[in-house]
Structures are given as structure tokens and as C-alpha cells.
Image (cartoon, rainbow over all chains, first blue to last red; front, side, top):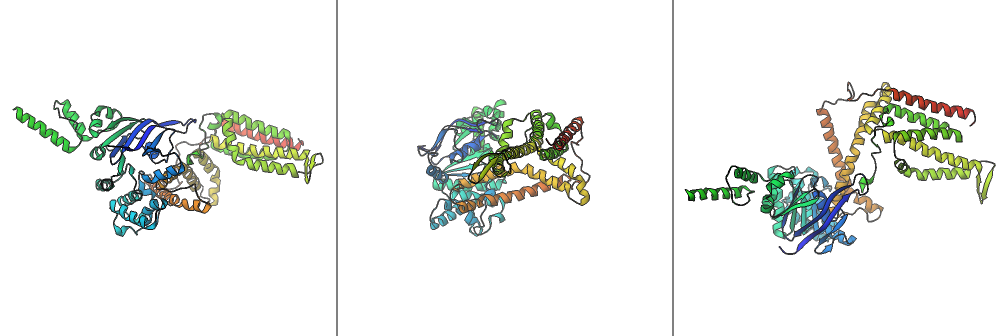
Length: 290
Length: 268
């Protein structure tokens, strides 16, 4: 891990200051996002996740603190705000409800067109984004409203990918999809990540998904970063996570229960594969002993 | 930015004014307006003003909230009183300049006209500030009930009104969300000339319309799933009943109207 591409410094945000509705959504958040990493942000509803990610591309201005993109404050000028919008791509929850153009192609092209790119470049990016997101060519000339739910979601994500952001931020990208749809979306995101080396930030409720793909995780609670680190580090605080109302991965729960029953597993376990390994090691150990 | 629009003008509370039957309050507003328009002199205006001040005091609505609501009509108030000031006919000339003549009658007309407009708006605020939208539509529905004989779909109208009121905050939230999402794709809403700005709204309006239709569809299904079939035979959770305070309020309202009419007869 080298230079952070996005650096969040002492970020605080207060909604409706000076009114009876005043609420502090974020308090002194420090977070770094490195080039080419996958960061999972988890937190309970109302923990400030959505507020945080909307700061990343200057949709919301910080009450105090700043966000640096490659060392430059993104809220410095109109120009810097415009720039960060395309360099940090933000996919909202249920992005399929934002489709509006007559054809899929035009909708994907909306972002690049706003960037005032030449027409050939726009076309190239649309094709590329469609490829990343598994949007078949024959769909490009159809109306987005004729597509299935999963297809619409992928078209919407392609609309953000078409801007070729260096950081792709997704808010619950898999919410409301069936297991197959979830799998496909995750593959699309990973394909973009692997081919372009873009950093990915995924906001999620699902510990399993975060655990499987994220290299690093940040846990938000009451507007502060309560924990951050590798999945191993974060899941080793199982009890604390449960107190925050966050479910630990099923395999971690099983490991904890086994521990209470007197079966000690080595290391932190949070995927099925790790569980198998840990159990095999245990089995092996016993066999050696006997 | 859209959150700043204050649509929910209702300030919840539990004062006598809040607890009055919505029908009483609607009729009181009508009586109050009648009294206000019958007032001709300083004295009768004073009587109406006293009534207004009394009800504001009882309802414990902060004066700042009342004044904030007056902002949109400032222009109209200033314009009408200016016209009255300059064009009212009278003999007692106070000042004369070029083609403008200001008379004592003009000054009086200007002040009274401004007072009438402000008091009119404040009086109606008393209704909307102290009555929840649901109670307001229920009250209207009951008051319009006789119109059913003329085949006016009273229940349907009231239902539509309450649903529209219910959905306004939802739609504002939705608009906010869609605007943010399109901004994230580089859309700009505050640059360019009027035509460009209107065009820039398209990416917001299309999804907004679609989601409104979807919402309406879902709502209709949800209502039918709970056996909604129009107003026929429908019962209420809270049935409105006139209480003692309602009769007292009526009496006060009628007294006000009578007082103003008598004062007018006496030439005051």
C-alpha cells in the first residue's frame, strides 16, 4: 500500500445546524483509501455511511475537516468539485431508479457526455463500461425501462463506470437482488477493479460479502470509525461488533460457539474455506495426539 | 437544498385551539373573514385584531413562525397599500408632488388595507398551523358532505387531498436523492441559461415521474389489499364530536361578527 488516493481528515458533518433538528452525522472521521484496494464500509442504519460516501465526491460539503484527492482539497473550487465528480464515481442505493434516457446506450453515455469528452471517446467508454457490467450489445438500443431488475442495476452501474473513476464507491450495490444477481454484480465490480486497478469502496450490511472481497474494512458507529483494519482484525472483535448490532459472519459465530464448547480453533475464522482449514488442522492435531 | 421548503405548516400542540374540532376551525375562519371584510373603521379593525391576538396567544404559536409565513405576501401588501395611498380620493391633502397627491383618507385606506391583508393571512394560518393535514381533510370532507346529494365525489376528493399531502415530503426526498445521483454523474443544475437549466431537469423529472407512478400503483394495491372500496360504509378510528369548547368558540365567532356589523351600522 503506497499513497492514499483519497484522504479524509477530521471530517465532521452536522445536519440542520442551529435548528431543533440539529444532528451530528459524522464526528472527526479519519479514513484513507489507497490506490487499487477494496475497502468495505459497514455500519448500522443511521451510522453515517451514506453521509460519509456523499462527501467523497463533494455532493455534501463538510461542516469541518477536509477530503484530499491526491493531496488536493476537493472542495477548493468549482473546478475541483467538477473534477472529483468524475474521478470518484458514486453509485447510490437502488441506482436503477435513476435511469432516464430513451436507450441504454444514451443513459450510459450521460456521465461521459457531462465530462465533455469527444464523441468517439464517449462511444468507446460506453462499449467498455457495458462490457465490464455484462450488458449485452443487443441491449444497448433498447429502452432501459424494458429491462429486468438485475439488468437495470447493471446498466446503472455501467453509467458510473463509463466515467472511468479512479475510485468507485457503491452504496449497497447488491441490495434487493437474488443470489445470482448479487454474484453477477460483484463479478462486474471485481472485473473493473482488476482491469483498471481502480480503488473500490463498498458500503454493505452483509458481513459475508465484506469479508469475502474487502482487503480492508472500516466499521462506522454513531458517525465515528469504531474499527478499521483487515477482516481478520475486525472480526476478532466479535463481541464488540455484536454490541453494535452488527452480525458477525456465520462462520465466526460457529467458531465462537465451538470455542465456548471447549474446541479452540486457530486464528480468526470468517469464511467457509477458513473453517474447513481450521477444522482440518484441529482434526490433524488430535490425530497426532492420539 | 429542497429540504428548506416548509410545507408542513402544522405545528403540533395540545392547546385548546389545537383540540378544537377541525370543522369548528374551518367555520371559524369563514366567520372571521366575514367579520374582517365587514370592518370599516379603526374601532372595528381593533375588535377583529383583538380576536386574532387572543387566538394566537391561546394557541401558543410563536410570533416568529407567524411572521415567517407572511414573507411571500410582503410584495402584495406593499403594492396594494401604495396604490391605496396614492389613488384614494379625499379632501385633506397632506402632501402633493408632481402627479401624486397624498390625502389623509389615502393614508387611512393604505393602513387599513395592509392590515386587512395581513390579518387575513394570519387568520388562515391559525387554521393550518394548529390542524394536522389529516384532520383538516377530514373536517372538509364532513363539511362538504351535503354536496354528495349533488353527486360531488366528496370522499374521493378528500382521500386524494390527504394522499397528496402525505406524499409531498416523500417526493421531496426522492427528488433530492435523484438530483444527487445525477450530480454524481456530472449533471449540473445551476449553470447555463433558462433553457439549459430546464433541459438539465429532464434527468430528474423522468425518474421522478416513473417513481411517482410506481408509488401510486403500490399504494393502490396496498389499499385494495386492505379492502378499501371507497367511502361507502367506511368507519373512522377517531370520530369527530363537537365538545363544549367548540360551542364556546362558535359563540365567540358569532359575537365577533355581530359586533363588527353593529359597529358598521353605528358608523364606527
